Image (cartoon, rainbow, N blue to C red):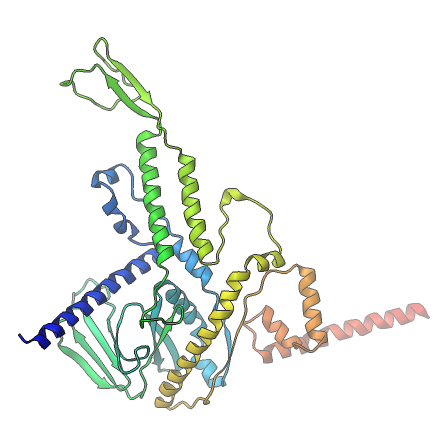
Length: 432
């Protein structure tokens, strides 16, 4: 084997090891988000006999933190393109809400744009959590993607070899774990039908780190709470001990309804544990609160109590998180335009013409207002022509289109105006 071959083989093994390690890490992040099988990650820190006494503690606050941090698609976005595009992207906000959450969790996600043909053609958006990229001259823009195809584990009728998919801007291929190509064809889109979203701007690598701090805290809390449960199981009522007992005499557990027969001079007693359970609970709360603050979140525990804060107080308290939201908007606007470029090419291949550019406006989440403040704000916008009555109605009922809202307002006026005229007539008669 030549020096070049040795170096090439070493690099290949290193890349394979890095890829496998990343895949295991992504699986761990997803498991903690779903709250499934998290006991597998902490069992190694305990003796196997311990779990005969108590089950492993499996708390899940990772999902709540990630969902709370993902605010871009909380109230959706307005995309002003065309009626055809609106019909094609009916499920886009719902899908993108999940994509944003997975991007927050994992760090980097690949989202495939899929065209679903039929009576009502539309786009679907399928996120891929674990994948490998093939980079060209630009280390931050992949030219191709490879990922394992999700196997249907619910189908017990047959077991197949693991399959992998390969996509580039012209070709699609499906091959098995032995490298045998099962399917291959030209898709004809002219673009790679994937958009890669990152939690934040890339630094020195294509992949961006995810919510490792939140998952690590969740893991530490599970370990601590499992220890606490074991302590309660064994030492809640103290640790019994006996002195002066013959070494060959059998020791057995005894309940309150059992009489112990001890030899003369023996002493049986119970020692109360010195551990302060409240301090353990406070430590857990401190860990959770610290990781929340580092992510510009705040937590309130049930026993804290307190008054419900006003909208202004919430906005002041949430200022740092709102600044993060403003920064993230620019990043996700860029991803939306990348998505539109892919959507436009795929739609064109399927005989649907879309405009050249996308007009986009993200709806900002609103802080709660009192009923009086809301009425004053709505009145101010109407009086200064900042909004129309129809658009205001759509805000309160987003199932309505603008045309439906305008018709409903006109119908309401026809019903209300005769009543108003009738009241005016009655007033005039009384004055006479």
